Image (cartoon, rainbow, N blue to C red; front, side, top):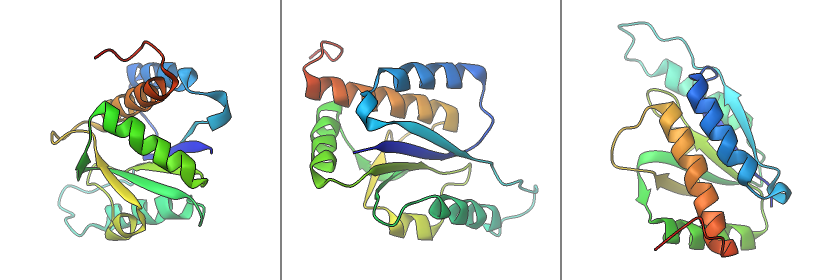
Length: 156
């Protein structure tokens, strides 16, 4: 199984890239983990039409493979403990399909992205800046793997 994340937002502070890359390097090589970035669509101050969110959604969906499992990161999704995530990751791995996580833009994701998702995961009920969500996601993915592998990173 290969794992990737597609995230809206091509420019993040250097600390985000540094922290994300640190956790990504720790993941198993056989996952061929990678981050695909999509540029944030420019928004005007008074545009409440949702056009940017739809455009970003179309770009996210265009990058998906038809047979991939899709996990959407969204504050209205299901919250899990790290142990729950490790078990869910094992289920996703046993499915045999590649796994793709989606992180939307500043306004979230389009309805079409929500419909395409096989699972919707909430990192927190807090609203997180996108860069911080990327880092938290990568850390939790590493933690889930470390739980599966019996690595001492996770302590209970």
